[in-house]
Length: 333
Image (cartoon, rainbow, N blue to C red; front, side, top):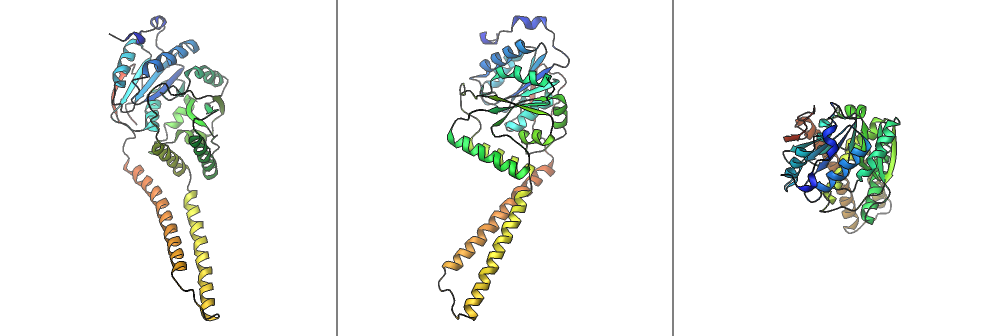
């Protein structure tokens, strides 16, 4: 028997599920058993008030708790829900891609499953989409924590400088995409996904909607410092080769400095008949050159590693099972 919180709303039985709903909401979840019930009640309640034609696509990104079982119960009582269970944890961006591949709506809303993205904002996103915008993205007014706020602003500034893509500081993956944008995204099968950058690069008509991020209802954030750093590097290296050019110019500057120092050494030896005694200057030059070389090799390694991952052609994600309303979604990339 389904738990009391998952009782099907009475008006669902009188509204047939459309072959292609007006809007699909894609929500990746991972180990969210503590809040999945509240999440579904808030999202589905908001959607019922906003439109007669919708579907919910949950993507279980390798949860190890009862998230999968609770999603199965939700699918049993709500015919507008489908759940895509991945074979393991492939990461947030891959889970979003899986949801987009299975979404059938004329518009698709992407949002996180921790309720920091307020579901009550979805009607505003739909209103702007109906007004003609292809992409309706959200921007956080505030960000919890000084460190996260400062590092986030730094990343967005560096990203804009390196890529020339106008990605607004505080922009989130909580956004609405028109079906044409989703179809365009299906043409990208990159291994190192950064949806905010991809959507900005495509250049469709966009508009921003500000929001206040709510405190997490329960559990811990899945975006650790290591994962945020990896996402930032994926975004930077996926959209720009400028770091390679910077390495070239930096290496040239160091080489010129080395030539200048060599000229000074020759002058001191031939005209002044004096040489620098000791090892201090020698160690400084060796350490400086060694550090520059290692840095350039590291940048080259980042790009080469991404080429290596791309040419293998492995699937970006694998689906273990699909629950609920299967619709016309794909079984994998």
